[in-house]
Length: 291
Image 1 (tube, rainbow, N blue to C red):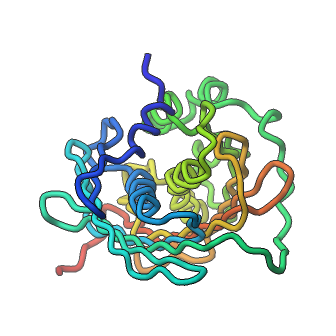
Image 2 (cartoon, rainbow, N blue to C red):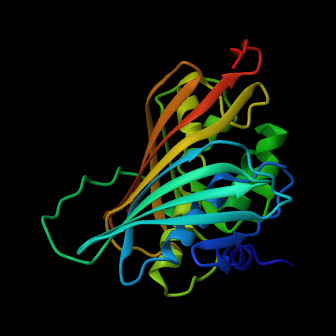
Image 3 (cartoon, rainbow, N blue to C red):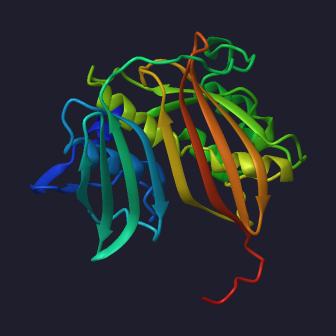
């Protein structure tokens, strides 16, 4: 049986082709399109390979074209600047000679400063929630087939949603969604690995929170959904193989786009990362404007 975490680590372990040039393989998937979190994680890893003694503290990316999961992805890194405290990198992800994703990342030398963070939402702890397997058994008969398949798959990131009823109901509700996440097996001690794994996981279910207010989900066959851009800020050290609360909310949707935010907390309530994303959430019956 395959080990999903080992496969994820292999996916993040890019091949060096030349100075500033790397190649990554794709996750195995039944879908032809590459998972957005994979491209984010690999692009961040490519940038990290060109920076010494500094950790990434933020990234901003744009999804330009769908990636083909059958093909490798080439990552070209531009070393924009290395200052006294910060380094800046730009990364292009390329398939068939076309840019499918761009990323800008900033790195900082470690230093102290003012400290504050917002409190973690009051939610049940992960051990008080059903596991992914238990969730599937309890609610699978009421879930759409696509959602059943998602929870049945072996994945490198374990998910424990605080409330799974949104997947079995079309009742509109407050645009908030919270879940506990962690790698399903121990990770190496390298903090860059933990940040790249969280970058990978940060694309999971985030756009879906924009559809909660409309009683829909990205699994709905009537919805065309795709990430358009993605931003991630790392505030403090963390372990991606320990439970993290990923708390989503969506302040706005409109123009066939949904905007979602995410806050990532350790189980003892420390805010370690923040995420923002805008994505396409278009009803498939909608008329698409011509380019």
